Structure formats: structure tokens, C-alpha cells
Length: 333
Image (tube, rainbow, N blue to C red; front, side, top):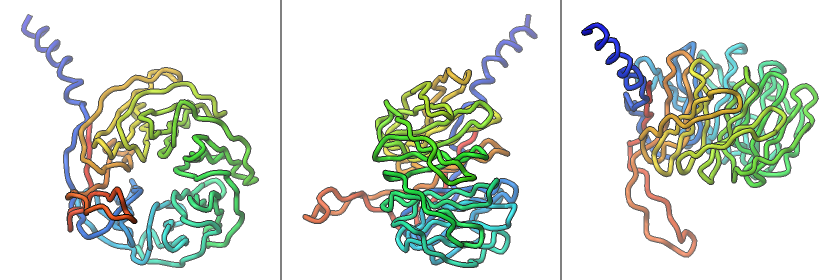
């Protein structure tokens, strides 16, 4: 009886032990805003956008180990371990920085063909790099040396993008659409509505089951098939800007910066998705990256003070970022 009771109690305890929660705050410091974060899981390094530089964080040691400077208005970092290179989209300067992934030194800076390069993607199959240019409403396609291969009109403001190895999928924020690009021909093959999604931003992919996860400004995560058909929609938190999918656990995530939560959704089957939890994080933690090795998630944010007084030029000012408060939140199962 005691053995049976102990077994029963252990079974009840298992879900609690696996509950996601914040386990660490990694201090980065410095001034300025942030956007996307990327990971090289093999080298245990995070690459974090931070105003005019990329902070390189050793996640095992929990400290900054390097900086890639002169990335004005940095948005995203795409990593190409097979080439020992990384690529940075610089929104303010309208450029892409190429850097050495091992030495963490800049190699070149090249001009994008559209204003405000935002999301950036490396496609290993073609070895092309795509910058998705927000105000330019297009994508610039580079080879790994920084030569422009093509410019792809997208008909709207692109946000995050992913690849399945033959196609590039990108959210179009102001049209609430998903655009599919053929990686080999660089032609837009399909444009589909993501309704009921409004203003999609973050995008994640389940390559095995052919599913895409778009997080939307109207508190929804919309799941679509590779052909663009919407198959499910679930509620998420407020102010999402990134999505992630863990192949090992079949969980999808939405980082919600406005209410400081991480929504977790389980893929029960390719057409059934259940909300698992809304984990408290911190206000401002709107982007993230998943470490497939540890199944931990890393979310950049900072501490905030009161907003400055409104002015005619800025009638709704944002809260101020407190000096030296920039950090990475680590969430673990």
C-alpha cells in the first residue's frame, strides 16, 4: 500500500516538476533597446541584439564574452555554423553585417536593397541570406559573401521568417498574410490570409508535421499548414513578438512582452493544440530563442521606469529603460 501510494504521489508530482518557470537572470547591462536573439547551441552562445551592437553571451557561464560593434539599429542575427559566419540586420543604417562566428569579428558591411532590414534568415540549402526589409516591403537576398542576388517584393511589411529547406515562409504584418517563397527560384509562390490573426509577427515551424505558428497582435497564435491553410487558433498573452517550437517536446511558445508572460501550447496532433500554461516572465520580454539541447528558453528584457512627459511630437511616450538593467531571462521546464 505504501509503495502504491508513493508511486501515485510521484505520478502527480511529475507535471509539477516539469512546469516551466524562470530559473536565472543573466545580467548584460549597457544602454539601449533590443530586438531578436539567436543561439548557437553547439557553442553554447547567445547572440543578442542591443541597440548598436550584438552582445555574445556564454549561456553555460552566464556572462557576456564578446561584442560585435557598429551594428546600428540591430534587429536580428542569422547564424551559419557550416560557413563559420553570422549575419546581422541593421535597421538604422540599412545594412547587413557579416561576422566571423568563431572569432566574433566583423568581416564586411553591405547595403540592403530596402529600408529598415528587420528579420534575417540564413537558408542552409542555398547558402543564401535573406534580410526582410520593413519599410522597404521587400526582401534582399545575398550570397554568403554579401553580394546581392535578388530583391523580392513582398507587398507589405515583413516580419519573422523560417525555412523548411526548400521554401521560405514570412509573416506580412500589415496584411495579416503568410508569404511563401521558393528558395531555389526566389519567386513568391503563394500568399495566404492568416485570419483570424491580426498583425502577425513571430513565426515558428514544425518541419516534421508541416505546421507554422504565427503569433498575432490580437492575442492569438494561428497554426497553418505549409500550403497556407489555417488549421487552428489558440489564445496567447498580450504583445507577442516571437514564437518558438520545440521538436523534442512538441511544444510551441509565444513570448508576450506587454503582459510579461510566456504562453505554452502543446501540439497534441497536427490539427489539435492545447494551452498548457502562461508562465510569468517580465514586462518587455517579447522576443526569445529556444535551446534545443536543454529545452530552455532565453528572453531579453530590462527594467522600466515611468514614461517622460508627453509632447506634441510624442503624445504617448514609452516607459524609460532603467540604466544598466538589460538582462536575459532563462526559462526552464
